[in-house]
Image 1: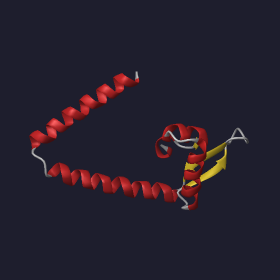
Image 2 (image 1 turned 30 degrees about the vertical axis):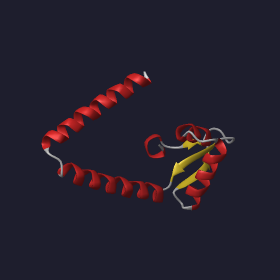
Image 3 (image 1 turned 90 degrees about the horizontal axis):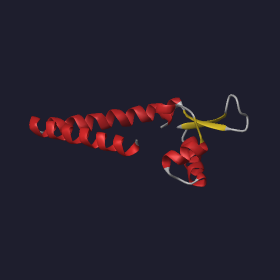
Length: 103
């Protein structure tokens, strides 16, 4: 979420993770201790703290995404073309249903 939307405050992060504020705060504490995120004062509201990815956090995220893509590609190569087409059709139906449910 931080890589897609940029900096978030703790309340927004808690909502996105569906966690309580204390749980989200502990999560951020652990990520901050690992130099994956940083907290900073909001540029226009000194009362608000923003949480953003660090360069190290972006690096870890990129590594995870690369590994995931490689595993997915390897799996798809092992499937028959008709199976890949059926999977694509099912995923498209899933996305349409999800979009309709969120509207």
